[in-house]
Length: 441
Image (cartoon, rainbow, N blue to C red):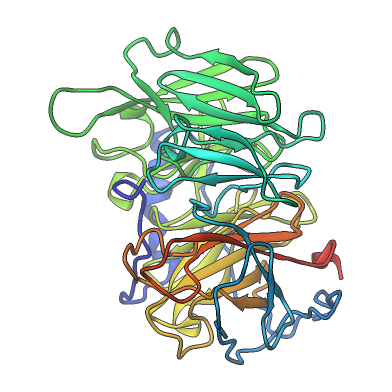
């Protein structure tokens, strides 16, 4: 939601080494009886890595250097019309007329890539369309961004999506409309009024493990978050934690909470002054480790060995960094100055695309190679560039015009909200399809 989620903020700060941020985390972890937090091993980008992973199909090839990729607008594309990005051959397709891909950290398309959820600008409504035809298969006038629609990640029920309402976790079949209660958390959190991640959080990549905050409505001021919840959808197991005692230093609330991609942990995105983002065991019995210096924009990479890496912008040294959930090792992927100081950025989850995530940027200008771009960022620091977003930022609504792009679960497609170069135009949904298993090539 625009009043809660972080915007496309330009963070230009004095650099500090990542080692300087770790002593307080070590002390915090020891005090909480958590898993030991070692000083991280920091790895710089491997600029000499083999570059054989990016050959494309049907005229598409990733661009591997810093050559400018520019937008060539012309007339607004018709629905499902394709325009080709010069320099890569990426085919940009206008998928839906009017509507939003609201965030980068979860996919808007179903597991079988047949359906897409298109959100309304009002944050409280959405519709489900067939990707191939644009046919509306389900209108959701009272289910929207605030209800945190997430697809079922499995081929056993590809048309199922989940959502929250008040203290209920629910599921609906987009085709049949069958709406069912999964679990009512009122008994688990009797003082709570709303179960939420604040829009940005997702489940594990198999839809089994979920993490939420619970907030209580009060007559005046901000609604306090007093409880954190972990849920195993398969076994029905619920774990809760008192937010006031879970590793934070003040009395604020997390920016968001989420399951790690493989369900190893609940990651609580505390701001820096609250204890910083932390990965906790699913039962909240111990903190595994801090995963970032502050609650900045973030995403996930899973590598070939099954290690989960939390990727975020380190606003103390200006590097995009990945922190291993397993070992605490830190990899520096890309420097903000290299990308361009005027860029804000969003990150995706990798889902099936092992070793990579999608980076999307927003900037008022187009002079630097990294401005208003869609880029695959590798765990080894390599970049595979896809296209210009064909988006004008900030326009009439800076938050909605950030072009925060998301991946499909199979890693084959990129989806984002765009205005086709006119910041005052109605926003539409755009897509680009990529070669099958491009990350293995």
